[in-house]
Length: 178
Picture 1 (tube, rainbow, N blue to C red):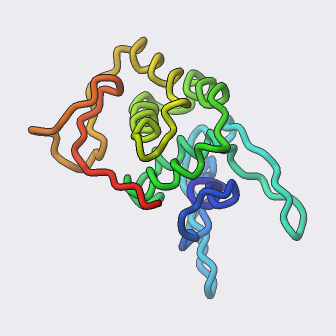
Picture 2: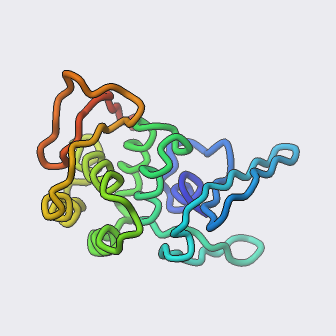
């Protein structure tokens, strides 16, 4: 279980996801049956990500850790409802994220540097109140001499404000809905 479905399990889904989201190690077709929609998102690293077992009424379910969830909502930003929703979810998820585990996951190589940059930027927003989690991420971005990237890959970067810590062009406005 991943992305917004995992965020909901960790108590951070601002709104109930419209679909149940699963990160899988191969391409799988989505399942739709009556009112149930399961969306599969592909990751070559699915077998390497930290997971945890969560008790449900019928037994146990394997879900992404809060730290993996934070990275995954930035990686699968379209499935996560784009940047406003992602920032809102992060502002709620930050309370269960362990800074050490977040940094270790960033170092592991499972996630590309642009995902680390975007996550760090969004957590460092004053409204998200997650700046205490970003020291390790900022060190990684600086040590790898990251290239400048757009916050929103689909939008233009000309004339945008740049964040020098995260090396991000702020080419979309992020509003957190609390």
